[in-house]
Image (cartoon, rainbow, N blue to C red; front, side, top):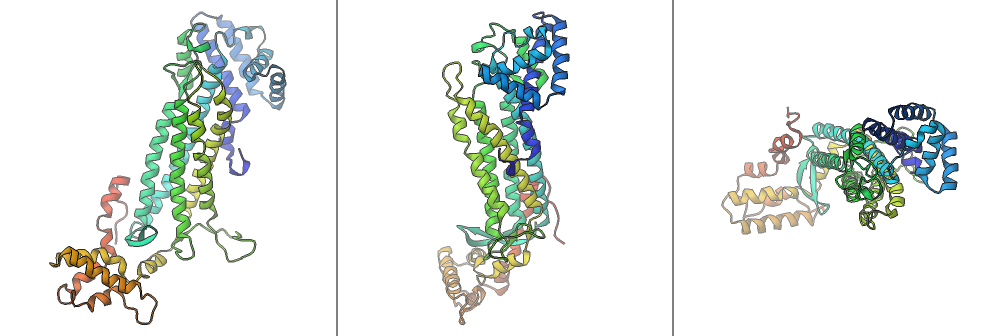
Length: 450
């Protein structure tokens, strides 16, 4: 986890302190369940809980160092923790981890951490959605040029563009919820997952207290298809981040200048060129999205473990679980802040619509000619001829607008009334059905035009 791109609240979830607290909670709950079912004395379970809680409450760097010291000798992280815990609990520690295997603790703990991380990511998603909804409502009627192949197409609404990203993030939030449900599982089934040495009711007890569901079949480990699906969901979200970041990067280009990231007082864009205002946030988001997506392949490769278990997945997950969630958490919060403060230039948007002399209305003019009785094939030929005449002479002294070329065309003049062409070249016509989309996306139409 690189501190530059790590929020403390997410880093805390993957800290050793949190991991050891969860490990103890799993062990203490298992002891309480075994005591309830008569497998160990109830007094022992109470002692383990009381002394263990006290030890975890006072947990310090000295305890971390002691666990590391034990692990340096045992070469086993769970045994090192259990040995430390035994030093704190005393003789009743002999009932801790009874009938369990290391994966029961490790995999269940990982599930808890991933659920904790996902709950934070869901909060991040809500912040992004709120920022996008505000921009979509603020700019519902802000006309801008739509582009296909990066070329001017027809006018659209800037709010509608943002609404499309809102809808995508709403879908991504649902994907994240499904991923959370899939990963929220518990395995307390002992060696090779047969429950030979532990009552299945212990697993049910622990799962219930931790807000998890017992794994259907744990082969000593929780099957890694769950984790693979989780990282695929994170990757799709990352791609949504990059799609929006790429849009902002394009809009901020000097040749476009329709919107830009907020430029803070005292901010510098370049060490050499004082005039620069660079899209550093959206470029950073593009890079972070690449990193989050890069975790998908190792997560998929973790699915094929040998027989009932091996630990080839362990080193992978020690990296991708914290790094993937930390990176996405930072990216989502950066995206939310960027979109909240996005600076929009409606006048420049209108100037860009007008910059090609009106040819962006060719589609509506084509329909107008067809409605006036001209065969569509002929109408297409007429409109394209006049559009190209406009396009190829832009900026020249003999240049004429698209409308001027149409008015001078004998195949149009006298056949299509001027008011029909006026209506066809009105950008506002492209906002006629906007309430339909807004109602579908937001459940409300939002602001009305005054």
